[in-house]
Amino acid sequence: MPEAICQSELPIKPWLDPRLNRMPGMMPLDWSDWIIRDDAFDAQMAYRDRLLDQKREAVFACHASADIAARELLARVLAVLRQDPEYGFDGGQVTRPDGVCVDTSSNHPLWAIGRLAQEDYCILLSENSQQVLRGAVLCFPASWTLSEKINRDMFAIHQPVDSYGTEMGKRVGRMFNMIRPDQPLWRANNLIYSNPDLFQPRIEGEKRVIETGKRWVRVERQTVMRLPESGALVFGIHTFQVPLETLKTAETAALLAIKTG
Image (tube, rainbow, N blue to C red; front, side):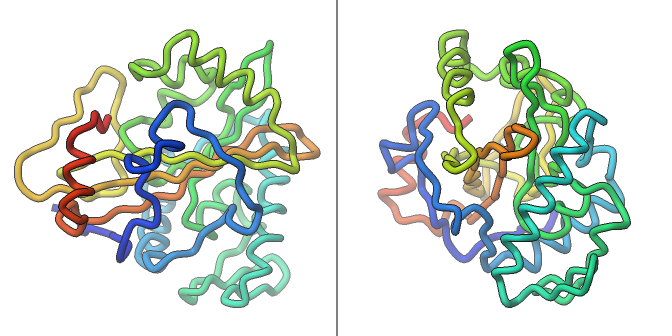
């Protein structure tokens, strides 16, 4: 059994919030909350470092068409992290709160971003009226595989998700087209796993099995923003996880009463 990297508690319980437990469940986001650093930072970042070093092809991909957007995103991330006094900056060298130094100029911008913050990021470009995934750093996939989804549009990316049909796809597409650079949005989802590994890729058509025994609740806080210069859409994914047993009895009952993906 892999190490269980967990937060001390879930700051979001989307199955209890009617604003979040319906599709697409998007709400306005304050820029001050775009990037989160929580009490699992050290453990999550150490795991991200290992994945980016040892499984680079599984957790990182970027088409050349998204390179400009990736550089713009890195600049935005660095600007936000400069507001956190626990980060240190010396030219292109950034020292994280856990003491690890990251050279932001020695590799691809998305690779650098993946080593700076707990969030995963996906870059989507508008092509022929479709939003196409052209770049991502995805260390903590929740039952999907980057190599299958890269260079596909949003509708294809979400297949075979039952709740993401043609009408939902149209609604999401219209919403994305209306997103302004000055107004990021956020939503959240929840899943139950019997394996606490944060790296959980799964190919299309492969059934996710929840075994008996100890289980973990995994919540993704997903943000979406538009970069002002490139116009690219950026999804941020912050992963929270706690043992199911740490929830209150009523919270557990409500969670188990719904389909959790």
